[in-house]
Length: 77
Image (cartoon, rainbow, N blue to C red; front, top):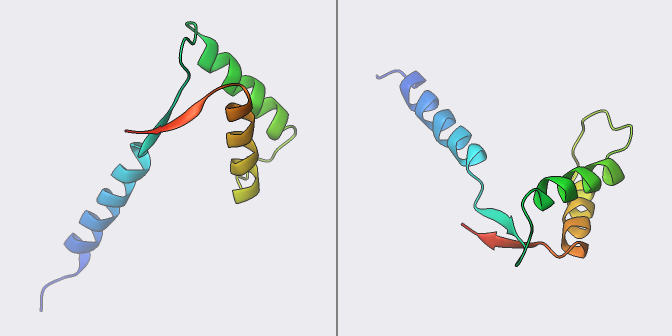
């Protein structure tokens, strides 16, 4: 019987690769240079004040809502 270790390593590497390269990104027509970073920083400060770093489904929804309110939209890669 072959060891399951190489298969497990390959599976974990594949999953890690998916996490590093999301299937979408934010776009905003006519956005000025640096506007994305400013808006992300603003939204993070608004959504995660005093956060312990824990990301929940609710905080992700709020973050997306904040970005969308600033004119950004999610676009598939």
